Image 1 (spheres, one colour):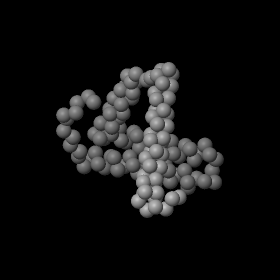
Image 2 (image 1 turned 45 degrees about the horizontal axis):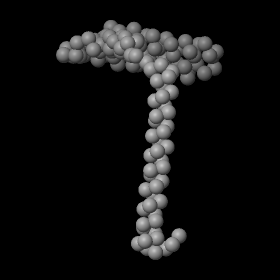
Image 3 (image 1 turned 45 degrees about the vertical axis):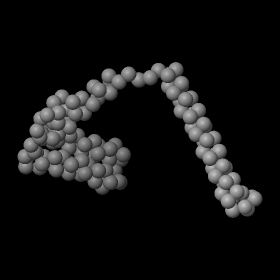
Length: 127
């Protein structure tokens, strides 16, 4: 996206930050299940807290910054996509449906032809 020729070097500190971020997210999930007797808002708060804390720690690492930059570039690319309008979508759907029906008929004809050749002509079973 931005610069695909950049070499990535991950230090031990970056690895530790990513591991800590993953541990915080997992801790949030564990907290959700550990707080099973608490109100749902507290349980959801545990998950959101773990996700936010993990994202904050990941943001400070090199791989995390590259991930967030990639996510931003991906979102921008998605916004630039030209989506088909209703008419075009309907036309393509009908074409696909017609092709599927035509292929089903063709495969049925091939199956029945092979069945006739094999059972009636070759084996003589007259089914």
